[in-house]
Length: 298
Length: 156
Image 1 (cartoon, rainbow over the protein chains, first blue to last red):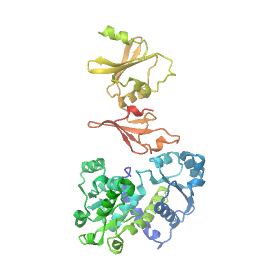
Image 2: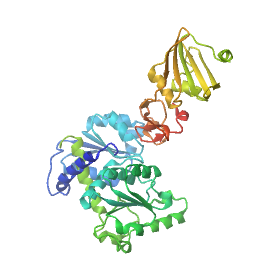
Image 3: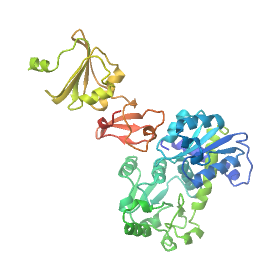
Image 4: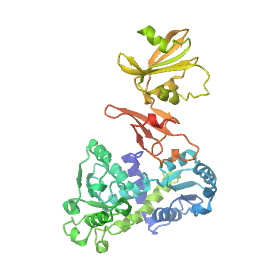
């Protein structure tokens, strides 16, 4: 994500906005007519895979799925480089999801067709960041944004790349987490170096009245050796109807999903809840990325 | 004193002398240059020799003038080393090592989940940065992991 300038990000988001009626099924498009998109998913990911599939089909393209890894040549010991070289001969674009860090970069070196990183290892998931930015732009505003990110800020890759991207827009950021899961200090340092206003707290109550967007993430049980500690943290960072009484009426709540119990179900029916729309925005954003990568739109 | 030290490590007729190597790094200098037991010329080195600027290592490689690119890799583990090219017992060229901006296949990425540590047909690739506070650091071009402390321990 760090390779993208603000202008380039805006360019992708503009393209996504133009394609939104197609993503909603209100208009038809043949932009990817005759094109085949290969979805190479080496680890499970429902939302990312499905939204790439929908994006391709809505644009009139066809999808080639790897199927299960167990049944593929990977189980016979084929390396990723060879898989990529072969699939390059079959498809017009590859979307790759792989458990190893940097696999998409390597795939791009061996592919003769464009490669889109659908999430590699624990660091990168750039299309998620694009859709998060698109959601913020559509549902709130990127310019002059006050955002709070809450939950597991230590390991959450979506918040790390979102921070970097939002720094290009000069957003004010508040990080809400238990002490064990705070934003890595090198990220906070780098944001402050860019003159970004950063606050850190462990309480949602402290910030709920003063932000435009609250970006929630899941706190994973496996991060805590002590189950009691997990229970305590889990309940300390929970968005409820009560909490939202103090919120700005225009506050939007986002979440990359899946959620567990960090947003209580009563919040879903409030105008603050935008996480299901956020999941939908993955479609126009991925349509834009597919169309731009294949050069069918400029 | 000079004569005594010359006894420890003989002058060479033709080749390369790497001086002012950080104390204790002589063997790593050979590794970083890819010099192994298959090398047939004479190699001599001293470790922890007293020098005007504290202890240092010196490496002498007979009969081989190493390329600038090869020699500059030494800066990764010993940024103050100097290179002397010797012809007919005379120093014909003396240079400081210059930190390269990019290295390939020299250092292993310390992120065990990095694709460059798997069985893929690729070499590790790093961009090299230097800052006042943190010294030399390597930034993996695959996984973006940063190595600063343990460069010498992870030479390939």
